[in-house]
Image (cartoon, rainbow, N blue to C red; front, top):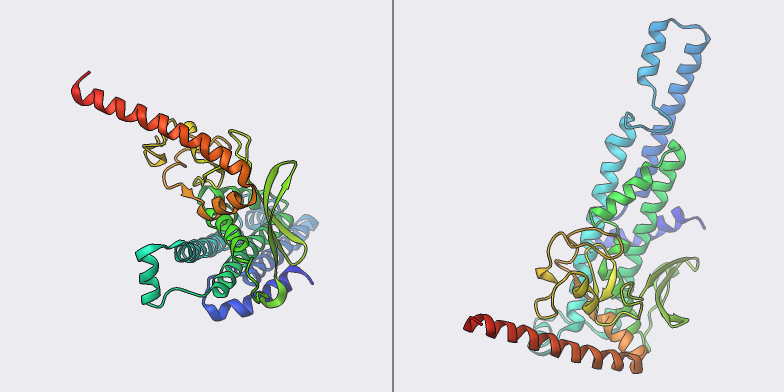
Length: 340
């Protein structure tokens, strides 16, 4: 079954929940309208070449929709991209908000957990797993829909504007696969699925999530439709080890918290929120990505249980480093206070 049919089946179930979605069918209609306009203009151009006046030639050329879509096509530039941008923004905002609430509910402890129970906002184990699974499916299937329609756009217009739009989406933080909450939900699902619960996803869209170690390199994977797969590399690009106390920057790249602090030229005591805006991500070199970095608590739980010996070694090392930095920090503060 083609992706479009699978996506339409998925839409029928999700519309009942009121979730925003990528209008794949509507966007395809826009592209079809653009193709018809291109064919009409090509026919006009052929008639012009046969023997029309120079004035007709100039008029036909001015109205022609260029196959390379250089920005003069009102169908593509005036409707297609703004519509896709609006839909993807709504999808990402909805996904991030729901994922954050779900994880906060699961990680709640003490008095906060008691309040959730009193006001009836806490959910059973099986319900949490199903919600996490549904959200992962929601994120990945909408991301695939966006990539499919942009690929179709580039194929129709023989252009690279679809690829350029993907780069723009990353800069605007509306590329859903960059969301730190996707990685957290995948880890959340693996952490919770250990219990024997009935988790069959509707339409069998959801395959499975898994954490694998290939040559000691960890990868978090998720499967859809038995053929579509998303892989997240969990190797820190700074220390080249499995991420420890993992954080995700605003650009979506994942590093160890201590490595991030070193890259941002801040101490562990002060944290990433005080990092200068001109500090860049070690991978993509984008600026201003440290403020608002997300601690991946579920991922840390998953890794600590998957490789306990290595995790304990890293924990002991980082504990000594944190104590050293804390001592240096407060020594400096004391000297500054007494004027030494």
